[in-house]
Structures are given as C-alpha cells and as structure tokens.
Amino acid sequence: MSLIRQIWLLLLGTVLLAFAGSVTVAVESARGYLQTQLGVKNADNATALALALSQQHGDKELMNLLLAAQFDSGYYSRIRFVASDGSVAFQREASGAPREAPGWFARLVPISAPQGVAQVSDGWRALGRVELISQSGYAHDELWRSSLWSALALGLVGLLAGGAGTLMIRRIRRPLDSVVDQAQALVRGEFTTVPEPGVPELRRVTQAMNTMVGRLRITFQAQAEQLEGLRQQANCDRLTGLSNRAHFLGQLAVMLQREDGATEGGLVLLRVLDLAGLNRALGHAETDRMITTVAQALRPYGDRVKGCFIGRLNGSDFALCLPVAGMARETAQALADALSLVLPNLSAEAGVSVGALELRREMTMAQVMSEADAALARAESRGPFAVELGGEGSVAVAMLGEGAWRQRIRDAIGQQRAHLVSFPLVNVRRDLIHLECPLRLQLEPNGVYEPAARWLPLAIRSRLTVDIDECALALALRDAARDGKPRCVNLSPSSLADSGFSARLRALLWNAPQVARLIWLEVAENAAVEHFGLLQELGRQLRPTGIRLGLEHAGERLGKIPRLFEAGLDYVKLDAAIVQGVGSDENRAAFVRGTVTLLHGLSLQVYAEGVSNAADAQRLWDCGIDGATGPWISENS
Figure 1 (cartoon, rainbow, N blue to C red):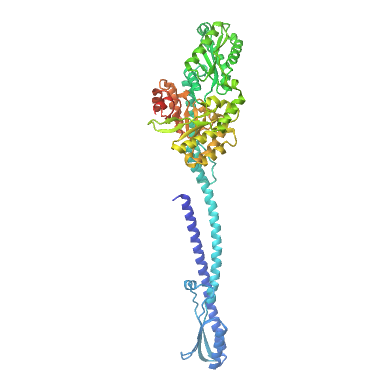
Figure 2 (cartoon, rainbow, N blue to C red):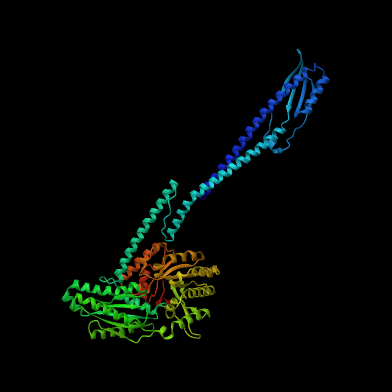
C-alpha cells in the first residue's frame, strides 16, 4: 500500500473515530440532561399533586376526579394513588411512544427517570402516597432532534477536516511526485533538478536527489570532455586541429555515397611548396607557424559554410570539400590570393599551389583523388600561388532551372510518385532492429526513382521538406501496417522550424496508434546542435504516440549538443565517417568505445552507420555497439 494511501486511511479513520466519539458523547450528554430534567419534573409534579389531594380532606370521589383530571391534562405514563393501608385506590396508565424518533433510536438510547413520589395527608392523618411517572416520548423526540443537529454539525466539521487533510496531502504529494519524476527522468537519461519544498523532511530528500543529479551531470560532462579529447586524437591533426587524412577521406566517401549526401560539390587541394626545404631553412617552429597560418585561412569555410569540411592529408597537403557545385575554382583562387598576401611575410620562399575539382555523385573516390591530384600537379608546375581546375563539372540545377526542379518535386509528392527503399539495421545476433527507409522520388513520370541527394537541396531551398517528411512517414506507416516490421524515417532539420510540423506528424501517428509503435524517427546531429529546443519539443509532442526518436550521422558534434542528457532521445547513430576503418585504427576504436560508454550511461542505444567490411563490424560489436547498418550488413543479412 502506498504511503499516500496509508495517510489517507489514517486521516479517514481519525475523522470517523472523532465523528463517532463526538456524536456518542453529545447524545449521552443530552440523554443524561433529559433524564435529570424528567426526574425533577416527576418529583415536582408529584409534590404539587399531593398538595392538591391533601386539600380534599380525604374525599375519595374528589380525589379520584382530581387525579383523573391531572392525568388527562398532562403527559404522564402513569399516575397511581396508594392508600395508607397499601391498597391501590387509583391508577391510570398510558403508552407514550415518540412521534419523531424512530423506534430503534428509542431502544438504543433509553430514557428512564425515577418516578415522583409524594405523601398525601389530611392534617396529621396520613391518607397515602401518590406516584407519578411522566412520559419519555417527547424527551426521545428532543434527543433525536438534538442528535441530528449534532451529527450534522460534526459531519460538517469532518468535511472541513477532510478538505484540510486533502490540501495537506497534496502539499506532501507534490514534492514526492517531483522526486519520483526526477528518478524516472534519471532512468531515461535526463538530469533534471526540482525546487525544494517547504517541509523539512521532504526538503532533505529533494536536496539529496538534486545533489546526486548535479554530480551525475558533472560526471557525464567530464566524460563528454574526455570523449571530445578521444575524438580529436582519432580524427584530427595534432598541429592544426583539422581532420586527418583518414577522417577527411571517410567524410568525402560518405558524402558521395550517402542517400541524402550532396549530388554535386567541389574539392580544393592545397599544397605547401617545398615543405622540407622550408623546414630546414626556417626551423621547425617557424614551419609549424606557417602550417598553422594555412589552416587558419581554411578554417572559416568549415565554420561558416554548412556541410563544408577541411582536412590535412599529410605534412604539406590540405583539402577543402565544398557542399555546392560551381564554387571550386572561385574558392581556390580566393585562397591562393589570401595566402599570397600572408605567407611572404613569414618567408620569401613560402608558397602554395591549389588544385580544384567539381564533384559529381557518380564519381568514384579513386577518380576524385586522381583528377584532383592531376589539377594540383599542374598548378604546382606553374609555380607558387597558381590555381588549376580539373574536370568539367556539371550543375544540374543550372541546366534545368530551379523553378523546374521545384515543380518536379511538388508533382512527385502530389501524384504520389514516391517510395521508400529499405536497408536493415541489425544487432550482433543479426536480428532486425528496424529498416532504414530513405525516400526516393520519381521526378519524371515513368522515370527512375531519384535518391534524396538529387533533389533534397532544392527541396530545402523551396521549403518543401515538411511535405516530403510527411509523405515519408505516411509511406512508412503503410508499409509497417502491411508486414509488421519497424521502419525508420529521417526528418529534415529545416522541417523542425515549421510551427505546424509536429501537429501534422502527430495527426498521422494518432490515426494509426498500433502501427505508430513500429515507427522510428531521426534527425541529423546538426539539428540537435542548432535547434535543440525544437527537437526537444518534437519529442514531447510525438513520444505519447509510441514512436522512437534519435539522431543520425552523429559523432562529430556530440560534445557540442547542449544538455544532451535532456534531449529526450532513444538512440544515436554514429556517422559512417566515424566508424569507417575502426577495425584497423585503435584511436578510432577508443573514440567509438568511449562514445558508446557515454551514451549508454544516458540510457541511449548506439548504432553504427555505413559498416562496409567484416573487420569494422567485429570491432564495433567489441566496442559495445547495439546495432549496425551499411553495405556489409545488407549483403550478410
């Protein structure tokens, strides 16, 4: 039995006992008072009647008439005259049942007053005695009325006491419920504090819980900082802080392969000329300063341009990947011009060459690096601060026109020329966790179904992502209802800013409450960084429907997510660029292992994206990953 219920029963029992005791005392007090008054009445009436009989000088007829008149005019149960010789000279009796009081009440609370007795004499001659008993029916009626009023008054007091007790229990229960909610939030991986109540005993409990939450929060923040250090060690160049070669190439490969990656983009390779000679001439410290200067010239692109990433491929080579097409040559020239003004101040011999390449989705990694290296080689042959562009490039939007693309996307959604493709996400036993279901659109009637990389940038620019996400969810609900398999749909971060987005998704989910429990929804990591409040609100609105909410493409900026422990997430998917090569790179494995430990501490499931070989898969299972997806998983499931 709960503590609150025990307090309720104790309060109810106390009120009932107080009510019963008070009513009993009130009734007994009134009964005693009425019996006393009835006894006094009997004595007084008997004395007055005896005095009247004494004045009749022993005339029996007159005495009988007087006794009969007294009996008829009063409320008497019995009047009897006993002569001096012991014979009963007169006796009249009558039953006086109460008029208002019920019979059970009269039997339960009897009123028995002593009879009134008085001597009758004629001068010095004793004539006998008169005995008189008044009726008790009217006393019972009065006692019944007073008992009802007493019970009513005490009942009202009991109700007031119950109301006061209810307020008191609510006052006690509110901080207790807050502590319970706080403990349940800890189970979900959320670290919340609650205000301290005014009750001293409960305040101590709340203070202890808040202190524990604060310490856990500090612990997880320390783990997050340690994890960021592991990420820097595994993925970043120690001198410049840029991505190292392995991580940059992994990011580039994911961009070219991922369903929602960029269709086109740009790659800029930058080489510091004769780095070995500069190191001998300038010394290690000055050379490092020059390398840092080049990195600082590149860094604003990664900080300000969404989707842009930078890396140091080796001692002298840097790389910059642009998320949009048609900007590679312009960006390369801007870098060359900026460095031509800065590097000569450090050394007259310092110089760079820049090669640029327009990327297309159909290009392979080998083709990309080959053409970019060729452009860089041509620029290097021309001398310091030369720029060369490799390949021709093609910009689909420029060829077709932005308005035509927008109309194609609208038509594909409106005419339901869309379907989901499925890729399994499995656990270590190869049991299906859910199906990854990216959306593809048929942009031309009877044409091929294009991946998101082909049309998503234009959809974001045209503010069509809400309609696209709603379409994807509707298809997932339909397919899940058909085969009963859980499905995962990714949502665009730009959709979160639409005020009606959550309501539209919630309406779809509420229309299929059983199937909604099979739906997993996820947003990219940058949505949690840039729109944390919107993501948190989305979870609050959709979680009652039974869906699961998580992050995809995570790992690079996990440490930058404010209050990750309060985001209300169910899982996190580590980006393919993070997990690729983990089977042969101990630093990457240490980073993944630390990430898994931290996220498990927040009660989050951790999955891996883009697993491409058995060695990576085995190392990920060893690191504690809960599930994995990718080309190798699809081929072996």
